[in-house]
Image (cartoon, rainbow, N blue to C red; front, top):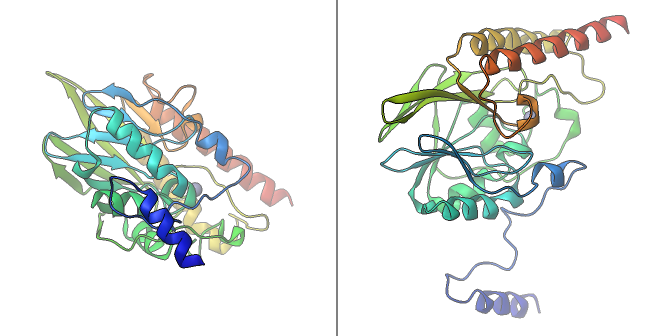
Length: 287
Ligand SMILES: [Zn+2]
């Protein structure tokens, strides 16, 4: 019976290659916020061949390097088809996506990477700790959110690990990896120059910098110390970055709108996190 249903589904995929009835890599992960995160949004050019192809509450960026495309983040598993539809709506072919950069190994930003990598043939790029998490498809043992449990489709295709300060070059683009640990130890932000003629702007796609954890976790515990130190390093990095346009992994953390092009946007982003972390540490010490 199962085989008969599968066959019908295969036949129903008219015109294209047969696809399984249930795609294991795009099965929805539903949370109290997933619908808000994945609110449909039209693709939008930000500046100089840099685009947003994600959602109202979840950022996904696209860079046209002139010699292939680069995607930043993959949102949730069920988001992959809509991301690729947005890429096509801009007139691009998803098969031209050569790299998909990852900001953190969590389901809301990385859940769609396995499907996107499979469907485009792109190489997934992450920090060493980030890549470990993407290969596992679940929280690292030291992740403050570990007790939440859960998993997401693991990346099984080709991956490239990049270190802090390393540059990914493709066509006209040079994209620099900026380690921004704290939310996870593998968190990575990505920065590049987008140009229109001779006028260039520095764009930063920033990983989440919020100190979120499962209920009983303490950032003031010995296990939390590397994360607190990581945040401090990340704030210094964000403060020092050239940053004309900030895209935050969760756009609502960057201020209003889908990106923030006000002067000092990256410093303000770091400052909000710095204050929130200080409050969190004070609350823990008061308990
Ligand atoms: Zn996260």
